[in-house]
Every structure is written in C-alpha cells, then in structure tokens.
Length: 203
Image (cartoon, rainbow, N blue to C red):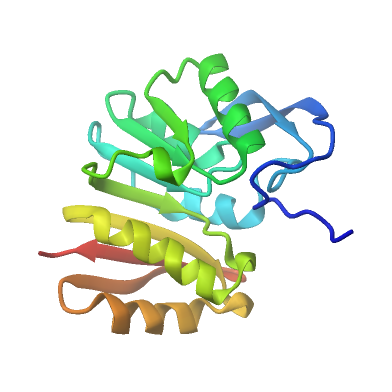
C-alpha cells in the first residue's frame, strides 16, 4: 500500500491527537495537532519564514490561507486581524477539523475552515498567505494557484513561501508568464533556503 500523504482527503489511519505549544502572532499558544496532516510537530520552517517576513495584515478584509494544515497561518491572520474573515482551505478533512478546534480554543470566531469547493464562488480576497503544497506535483500546484490567485480583489496581495531547491525561481517565472499584465509579481523576501513571492492584483 502506498504511503498516505498530508494531501489525502480522508486519512485512513486512526487519528492520534496531541497538544503542543507554539508561537503564533507574537505569543506562545497551545494548539492541537495529529498524525496524517502536514507538519504535526509544530510550525514548519517555511511557514515560520513566511510569518516572519510578511507585512502586518490589514485590520479587516477577506483573507485566505491555501493548504491550512492544523492552522498556523490562518490562526495568525485571525489573531492579528480579528475584524477580518479568514478562509482556511485544505483537502484534508483531519486538518480542517484541527483548524476549527484550534480556532475555537484560541477564540478566533472569524475563521471559516472548509474544503476548496465549499468556498462561495463570489468571494474575493484582499490577502492570501500560503505555504503551498509543492509536493502535490507541478501540474496540481499550478491548478491550485490558478484557482485562487485570480480571486484576489483589485489591490489584493498574495504572499507565497517556496523553498529555493523546490523550484521557487521557476514558479516565479511561470506565475509571471501565466498571470499576465493585470498582476505585479516580485521576490519579496528571502530567508535561508526559502523565498517569499508577492503577487498583487492591479486590475
């Protein structure tokens, strides 16, 4: 039997939850993780790099975390911008359950955790933060990004963290070619092995 990955929709291994302490939005927090999801040991290095480098989010708006896992990015957005609505999307139902429970435990009533198909079609986003699931493969990754980046509102920004040796430069080139003139794209920051790409919707 092939090993299941964190992007499996319904892991068939029994869920084993545990509580860990991590730093989110400048404070140590207690959260719940489990097996069968991405980075159950804590906040992974890519997400840490993203959260250290991104500008502070606006006080309000409609935000998105693509591939939320147990929720570190979405929880940070929600804690820093309690007046915003934060969509946390993932195909892994176990991840979504953990994100919902962590949001409840931390008092983040502004998080909506759901599979991608449950996000209303008319919703646009002012801000996207994501550590996208590079290991799903190039074709699947491109499909994911082309699902969500065009849903940025005009003036909206996306920040994506990608490991350099997993193709940050080629992804930047592809995004520039594919999104076209209505978007501005730049390498916003670098930190050790990681690059943070910024995409802004201009029109």
